[in-house]
Image (tube, rainbow, N blue to C red):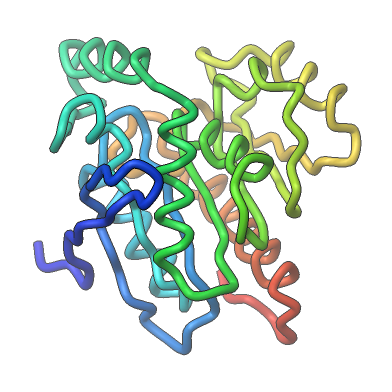
Amino acid sequence: MTRPGAMIRLRNGADGFEFDAYHVPPGDARRGGLVLVQEIFGVNDGIKDLADGFADQGYEVIAPALFDRIEPGFLASPATPEDLARARETAGKTDWAKTMRDVQATIDALAPPVFITGFCWGGSVAFLAAGRCTGLAASAGFYGRQIVNFLGETPKCPTILHYGRTDHSIPLTDVDKVAEAYPDLPIWLYDAGHGFMSKERKDYAPDAAHLARLRTLQLFHKAAGQKGEMGG
């Protein structure tokens, strides 16, 4: 498959660590930069598909390989139990402080305005980055299971969250806890399961994915102070 993007190398100026990233130029007039954070399966084809899609909407996208600190070049498939177990084990080794520094390096590699979105593990990263990183205009987190563990964080930019009502890995009681902690933060629920944005996942839900993407683009559009309407 021929893709519009390519793998690049980024450097974290805080400690000199270098990591890979998938970079896609905007397919239309540039609306801004977008940090797109992986699921627990690494920067695989599913993440690249999502990056390509946002680039089609006019965003310069960088999807950093944030597991490079744990296992350089890590890739796994959501389709096999063995890969799922391996991905969960790798995600469990996350050093959040170092991850935030690598996210900051990715933000700094993009010209403003810069936005962030993330999926699964990346949804939690996107939420944390809204409070811990600088230079972000808005954040949209998708089905971040660990957000409930970080309810003391305060987003410093406009933030929205997306969850699936039938997500077996994120009970609705956890979503309620997030809503109670952040009563002014928009939280969208969809008739879908975990991973509903990814065509690689068995829970892919086209209607929910389309609506969630539209709401995310509208957030970015508004945060950038741009006029006009966004396409779906």
